Length: 340
Ligand SMILES: [Zn+2]
Ligand SMILES: [Zn+2]
Ligand SMILES: [Zn+2]
Ligand SMILES: [Zn+2]
Image (cartoon, rainbow, N blue to C red; front, side, top):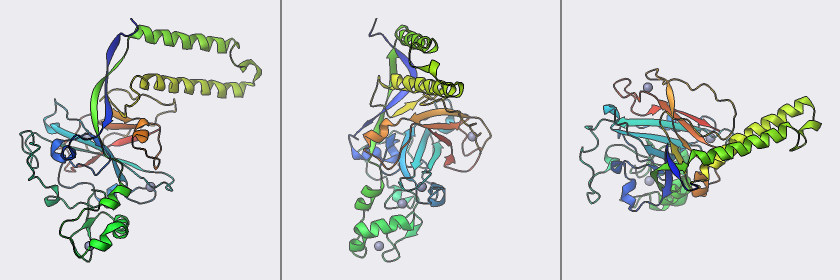
């Protein structure tokens, strides 16, 4: 009985190296962390103003994208959620931005047949002007060569110092490789797999153990709760409550320690603490309720060997209707993210 496992409703995302670098391209509709964003709709991508951190005003950097079409919604045959995060360590309130883009099966950007890896004629740069460093919208051009675009003076300056100064007038083809390496997160594919957890009978035993322990605490046989004043007792009790939530979090994560994404549209996020949740704002385009869709768990920072950002979990809430350009012409719609 000990090894009996049941499937949960959660799809887990695991980091893997791309087998072929090409697979990270927009036309393969990847789920991934790091690198440059693989934009879905190839028009009206978020502007530098929309991407800028509301606290330090630096460009937020592409962090992750999840390809999550909705079978029952013709307008969401292709659908990707994008997460951007401020990487500026000295920023006091590192902003997280979230955008949803979706397309019908027949659309102006992608052929309706699945893409062929050997076909090389699909160039995004012809359709949208991208920042050579971060892959965001790039309305600024190098004044000298007028061949390279940037999202911001900040990224132009990094590229100038790292590489472009030497190559500005001589280039025909150019990649801001050095500046990108400094600015971007490490790129990894996200591969999804259904979560399996031990059978409930086993779970119950764990819960029973916890209940037993709590009874001991109440009876004063564990810890020294009987010695403390009422107020302190209240604080202690809160502490126990939070630990319990965190214990539950760890207990669930431990089955797949290298998971970085937990996806369950209209499910519930795994909480890391019992801090009170704010009210989730309704969709600003169609006024539908937003529902939980996926969360990014802190293991991702370990996988990326990244210390420029810090969080417990990032919980993403999206429009329950997943409204389309029919509801509002905005191509990249804002969604809601809760950092804990
Ligand atoms: Zn910032
Ligand atoms: Zn940029
Ligand atoms: Zn130049
Ligand atoms: Zn909506």
